[in-house]
Length: 284
Image 1: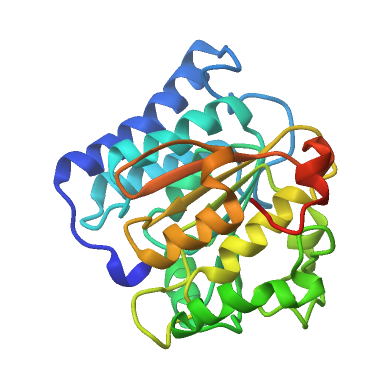
Image 2 (image 1 turned 90 degrees about the horizontal axis):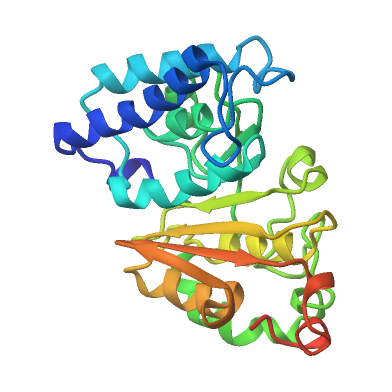
């Protein structure tokens, strides 16, 4: 995520500020907001992040994007797809693969919710957190490399712990696509929204997003609570992202919409799938 961020037109920065400021003004000054418009920051509940109120996070975000030269890598149209879902589902549990210059925006758009970032580079975490200490980020070590993508796709079915009927994540060392060593909080929560915008996937030795896509699919299928899991995948202009999305996120079944380089899926828990899909040895 971080290496492909570039200086965007100033109009995108103003648009991001407008998204955040608009939600803050509506809920803060009118004092009422319909759940279909946005999750009010005046809603009773604990702060999204200990020590910081939702209003403080949103105000900090407005100041940051109003003065920053580097703005989110996603286009305004791409951001709006996730924003439209957040308007309906927040406060929610929002898991994001990747920490970057857009992270403060995502945290501020989920007031009273839980927004957690998973990042591969511990030094980059320190760099970002230094300027935005209210963000919650964990370091993740991946077992895959982009150059292994074809092999992983062709061999994962031979490992029972990778199969859709038996797949799990925590301590699943046999399935190389499973993120088996994540912080306990990641396994304990059921994630309403999952955004995959990392790890790096543009050179052979990079981790690639194979494990992130697979693990998101397992999280969604293993969901015990009601409702679907909204999964957003960025950089679908790249072969690995497209191929693994079609294999595990099921573009033919669960794709909702997309724009630019972003695809949006709504994946039901296995319990809500048809018996054929629930017992199949394939994800899609």
